Length: 334
Image 1: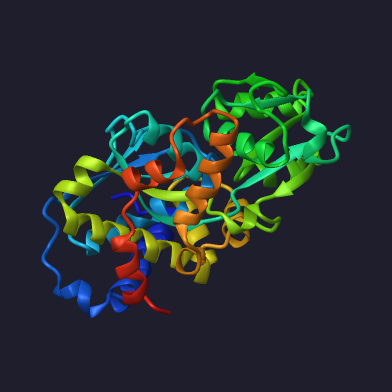
Image 2: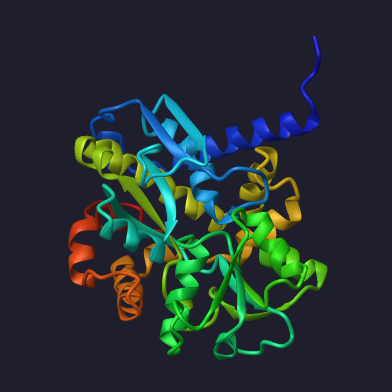
């Protein structure tokens, strides 16, 4: 019989520790709730390692979901909540708004954290206003980084539809290559890309959304559910949200453990990079900030430049439900 590898033993030990910590922290009200109406839950998983480490609460929530009564937790590589391929996903706030306007049956449930994006540029660009007329690398039109930067540009009076040359890479790593090979003047990098660029000494940061206002006051990642799931399974929806919020708390309070789990599961094999990302992101923000303010902020910016036609009021009325979040903020008080 082949013995377990050291990494596998460490991984199992971490899972056990995570489970014990979660059980000890399970609120009485949660234990008193009826079980979820459905036992299977599907979650987004970004394809490939080292992409979108800010999704850590989604990735670490698997064991917590089992404690909440879900016996089958499936991660779907590249699964999109807008297309109904998964039940829950973390999505950037600006990206949610065009999806709601297009009639996608999704609902925003909570903000998770701020700060996973940094606007990086080569030396010829020193401020965001210098981007007018410049080349900016993105994955594709409508991608998270495209819409977030479009909102930023609108905030400083630059029309993202007319004043920018968008260079598409069609994949995150190819978009990154466009910037590193100097085929683009700037890019909106998302974790762990900023950390990688600093390590390689390529470019410099113009805006760090974790610390620079007003972006540090707005959620970047929000938890989104498919409308069919949320409407049909309200108990399961609340239990799932609780698992993800508790996973965010683990990232904030025990970043070393969270980083080891991410590395063991292969989401980021470099433990130090995973730890750096988790330490830099304010994962307790869900307790303090109002996610509706974030969606309204970006809806106004994107409405100003014609990327969304609907009013912020209409988008928020049709695509948000903060009831579970408000209940859980009281239930999970630190």
